[in-house]
Image (cartoon, rainbow, N blue to C red; front, side, top):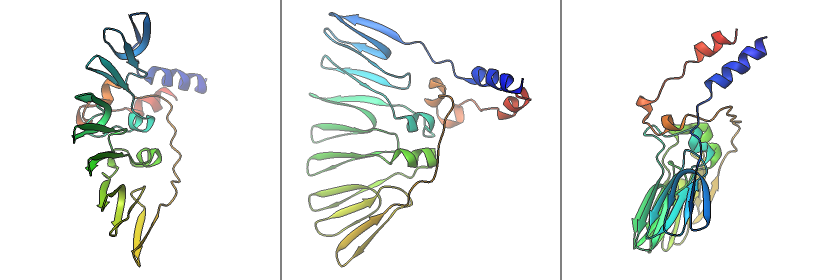
Length: 219
């Protein structure tokens, strides 16, 4: 009886994900979310957390990683698509420079320009699962024509290295740079996806969960 009540409670607490839609154009059919179509193409995001954009007749779609979906930033999970001339990209913290455009894959990533090239870097999925909205913003460091992004970055005249996690460390000795990252010991398991309308909102506007009610219903 207890397991039955718990199962009913979990089903009741699952967010009502919006139904997928399908669009058809010029012999092509696409189904999903945030669909966009041009004169001869149609595409959709695979999840209700994704987005699509159209630039110069081309359709671009993007879906956030699972870590970003389950651990949205305090300002809300809002992927975007941007275009510049013949260039277009989708993601987060997009950078437009030198006639190019690039986006990070997660809201915790960074993009930088160096010697006319755009570089984007994202923290590991395990870091985002562990720290969520508290994930520190990575930095980028350069050395001559080289660039690297991450944490505790160190450089010399020609080389630059960064740790991949906030707890990592880089040391420079005799002009040699070595970095170390401790392994993540976290096992993150999610039973239900978050409500798509809620993760887009800033943290202070999201509905508060009520675990006490869940506990009472399972008794």
